[in-house]
Amino acid sequence: MIDTVALRTLVALDSLGSVTATAESLGYTPAAVSHQLQKLSRYLGAPVTERTGRGIALTPVGRELSRRGAGLLEELESLETAARAQSGEPRGRITVGGFSTGIRGLLVPALPRLAASAPELTVSNFEEEPDELIEMVTAGRIDASLVFGWDSSSLHLPATLISETITVDRADIVMHRDHHLAACTEVTRSDLLGEMFVSAPRNAVCHRWLTALFEELGSKPQIDYWAIEYDTQIEFVRAVGALALVPRLGRPHLPADVVAVPLDDPSIARTISLVWRKSMSASPAIAFLLEEMKAIAGKTDSIGA
Image (tube, rainbow, N blue to C red; front, side, top):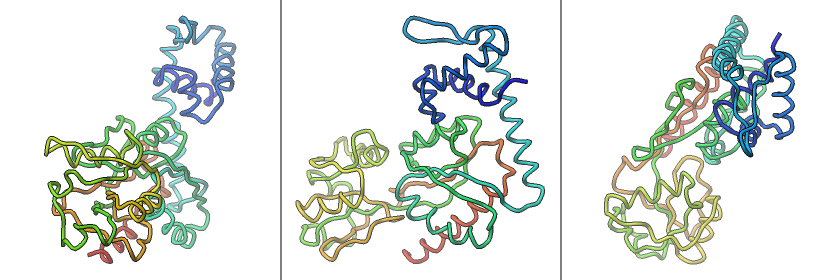
């Protein structure tokens, strides 16, 4: 019988196009990917890949096996999920991905509740940017993930994934209490023109979110400082008076000399969702996780209202 690990490796290679990308997606080394492909070729008695310059491509046998194998892998996971769901109780292990504030604000608070209501379920996590997390769920490297998007940068999910909204999270402009905008009840996009910002690295999702604020004005934010973590961005706010766009969910505690001023447009918000493969839709673990995080988001919204 065809080894499912080797088949999953072939399907991932067909989708991603290179051994390196396949290895990164599945959490293997490139050598391990090559080994799985060679094992599959030996079992079939026919090569599933061939050299093309510096890379490799699927042979006709490999392409047909990948095409049919992708559906079989989905059916196998769906069958396993349905069998596990017969008891109605979440069991086993589930790996959940997420971005930093989503993990801090939703997943971590859910863990004690899950431990109490589903003691036979073990939850582990993986932190990364939303774009990479979607790839990891698609490849089967993780089971589900928290992701976010906003109107000008909606998430593009493969047909094999499904998502459900957990909450809509507004963002504020964080600034030093001595900043000239700090006394405002709210600020507009125009108020931010010419102001100095600290931002997440270029092309990170949160950097794209910040730049999107200025697109309607035909402008770009003045970014003088860069930091991945919001804690570090807040230190820039304190030290040099920069502004930072910081969402409310999972926000670090603000020091006494830092304030958060709301934006005047409530639509400036990110939609936070949980995504998972359609073949895992019957999973009680997914249902429990989604229910708990929605409850936590609801309490957070009530506190912030």
